[in-house]
Length: 75
Image (cartoon, rainbow, N blue to C red):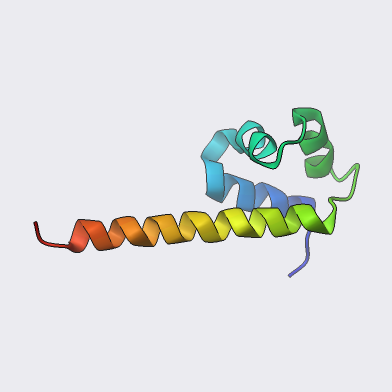
């Protein structure tokens, strides 16, 4: 997969919704300005940041699967 500003925007929105920039910058411990620069393609994102985003995706997927199991279980 190509790691582009469009990829960042798509995954950010999947993780955090319409206000993804602020939430993702906080989660990655970077400034909102840095996030905007990455989104606009002004700066390349370090590979480690992509790995951190992948970790966040996995964590959210696992959390959602856990909730799906809980919701399907009988009391």
